[in-house]
Image (tube, rainbow, N blue to C red; front, top):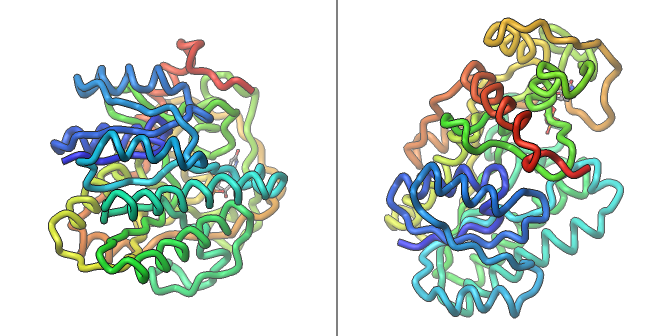
Length: 347
Ligand code: UDP
């Protein structure tokens, strides 16, 4: 069964491609390599799976080029749509870049689903669609708050566009996966997060500090109303996220779901503070991290974590890796990044 994965050489995309292949799916990808060392990632996927994945290096906003992919692959049974611009700060600075890319790409994918009769779609959404919410943990039924950034708004709008599409196309089935904080790397140490731009996410920043890429790191805020004053997040291992896509596509293909768009939270279901994450890393590596306590970062919510009961019950998805595994695999991957010049960020 052939699955088209857009953004398939990116961070979550590449791990999902591996998990799909591990579960017997045939995979093709569309990725323009705009934020990854795509050719290397494809080689590395082959090292893990023994399979050469065919990638179309095209821009998803170019509808004619996307049509060619569907025309050449009439056996696509499902699409996992990751490809998008993903940086909150960048989106605040360049909102149109986000609206143009993220929304046009999605509409083109939906047009091709319609034209080529593909009925199953999984969409990468984000817990950022909830905005700042007071009631924790967050349930799928929690009303969406105001988007805190253009990036988050493209995810809210993307969900609505897909809902409208499934209302107009009764045969269409969609799942919207709201990821919490993805982290960690494949257990082999062969793939992991390697963006073309400098990373600002907590877990890679911790590892970069430990290896000496950064002199020190900052804890952004220690006066939040949380157990130790630092922000609480739900860190979910990237291979558990990857497996949620496999489970979701299996769910769609087994006809357990009949039409419409269904939402699932994909988080571990526990909150971890920034200071606890640092401690978990120090415990695993025996390295004393050089961190400083700093002021709050603009736009950060104090705490967010998922209620993941719905995904567990409906999809049979069980996240298996906690914060310790996240730190262990991140640290192993950091050594690879450190030794491999061709995987380093370009800026
Ligand atoms: N954070 C931090 N220092 C860093 C990077 C992040 O203290 O160098 C904090 C950040 O303020 C937030 C949490 O770690 O409370 C997770 O941030 P990240 O950027 O990884 O993900 P977000 O939740 O913002 O999507």
